[in-house]
Amino acid sequence: MMGFSSVDQEVRRQAYARAQTIMNEEVPWVPIYTRSNLTAVNRGVHDIMLIPLDFVKVTNTTYKD
Image (cartoon, rainbow, N blue to C red; front, side, top):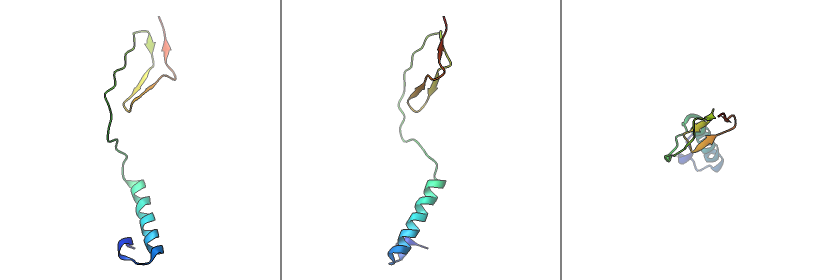
């Protein structure tokens, strides 16, 4: 079923819906931009997670003297 070669609008709709489903399932997600982050902590901060996509996760972070 080829959407570009049919004049039937329903056939075209189904073909392009199927193509979009395939692309969503099979094409990997690739970030097109990440920026360099500068994050500073001290020796008392433990369990901090630096995530390369602009996040710093501090949910389980603790501070000990």
